[in-house]
Image (cartoon, rainbow, N blue to C red; front, side, top):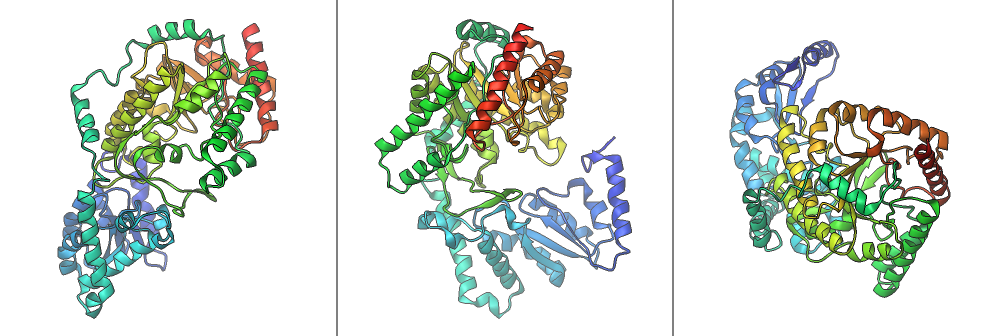
Length: 556
């Protein structure tokens, strides 16, 4: 069974203790580091493990400190993670010094100071930033600055001569001023946005579509006239060197706005024609104008800031430059309407409007630390809801709201999952629920396990969900089959991370398996993910086979 303290299977709990008992035979000192949450009910077990010290995350759980001070054996050190290693905000140093006062008095030399976790989660040095104004820079601390904060805290706590050095005193004073200025800044607070979130409590219908899926589906199929096994793509098409060059020239001022728009429209027109030639049923505009699926929207929303060199590791050798949510989020004007309208004007076939969802924008940005993630997500949802409604008014009958990050936002402990999932699902539904029944809402989730959150995926109530399934040979559909997932599904039929072109037979085989799990009337045919990293020849070859496979499935 699951151990209530750890949120882990009982055998993991037992293995945890036995492993550290075996490790004490090694001739090395061990500091056991815990972060991204508190020790919670595990405190007694952890303090008694045969290790030389403990590191705890006092940013995520400051309330765990008193219990540790009472129970920590006299021979162990305590590493206090007091500077946030997961976010870019400057620390409130006076607050931290007060927080650590009793610990310093009781532990003395056994109190170590550290960031809450590894600093690989934040950019390296704020001094490298050229695009942030002085006010914003005063609010932030990157890895180098966080090390300086830790050092200053140590000097002040020990009370030596270094505590009176001008640099240390200035750091403490500047931090206090920055915290105060940020709390009062108009860049942070927007009363209209805050009131709109408060009003959600009394609006019981804002996160519900007008009718249940079965009613909507009938109206959508009558309007769109889609065949069985309709074909589509996830959103992006190849971002060629020419596209990236045009965006760079526009950003540098070497290309005026009119010329840039004309260049992007030409790319959109070409992408539409290619899709029509391939015989796809539902088209996309290709996203030539977008640099990144989060940054693109953040740059058009109030409440965001962007760095010039704030790169952090994503995975492997891939790095990203996350936006920073600095204040209340709102949409000052439409973001995607003109691009989508232009694309739809080029064809008689339906073209999807493409948006990144509120949960993914939140998870792939540095969030605020002065309000909850839920608060920011609801603000994002309301801003994106306005965009969805405007897309519908512009004649876009299918709108995709991507949420690839919804699972990665889960808290570490399963006991905390429901609270997160409830506001995450609500945020998506707020975004999607302002349209008529005839408007088809899609969402996309890539490379996720769905079994243990399937009820929440269903609660999102998207008309169509597209997911990655090709690498699992359609096994990920088992969760949808067992749950009797009621809406439409597009199980990805080929892995876009591979240059291999899938054969018609391969795609037919996968979709035949899918039809054994999900009624064929509710199946779509699509790639696993967006195609921006691929080249046109392999994309067109793969999609040609995908369309032919769908035609064969309809005829069989």
